Amino acid sequence: MRIALGLQYDGSLFSGWQSQLKQKTIQDELENALAQFIGIEKLGLDPVRVITAGRTDAGVHALGQVVHFDAPVERESFSWVRGVNSFLPSSIVVNWAQPVSEEFSARYSAYQRTYIYALHAGPYRSPMADARAGYLMLPADRWFDIEAMKQAAQCLIGEHDFTSFRSSECQSKTPIKTIHSIDIYGDQPWLYFKITGNAFLHHMVRNLVGCFLQIGVGKQSAQWMQALLAAKDRSLAAPTFSAAGLYLTKVTYPEDFNIPQPYLINSWLPKYLL
Image (tube, rainbow, N blue to C red; front, top):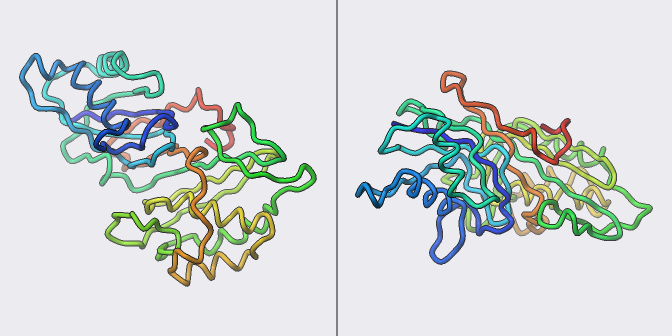
């Protein structure tokens, strides 16, 4: 039986999603919780391996992560939720579970992913937002040029080669991705970026945010983004911005799979973003 799960997690205490030797990862925590709930060792079964929609980096959070695995036992959907949660740390939560067809893949069946980047700016950082949001120091009498950033975003919409915003560690087979929409909201002292695309390169969203901020504070013009995109040269773009404010908020699948919407009622992000 193939099972899909919807997850939320605070990634600040983890070395990212993907299992790594001698590192604390979300994948390891989830697979360990599944093993305990199923009773893998007691039943003499092989370990359960999960496939995720998006391999989030160290410090990155998720409100709408989706995974699937092939279960060696049958359980009711509510039982998967309650049972697995009982073995997870408080920073990781399963919101829903449901059986899916063998054709479903959390990764390859997804055709759209949405990320939100939350940042606060001002003379001082907020300890209450530490590890939950990015921060940029700005004088109290200054704010971002939101219109310039929105203008810069227009050249990114559609299918492009995003090499200039790609990490050197990226394992994607191609730098060509499609961005469907970019929304930028200023609500001083908060700034939010909402970016939706078919898929993203390693560090792509954080690299884009770093470039947007250069434009927002007036260090670069709106036209600079178009030049970066055309250059296909990572060394010309801004440094990778902090992981703390990045959230995977939604993964979209064809309706035939009947995948539930993310459970976002307990998110601290503004409702108009979700």
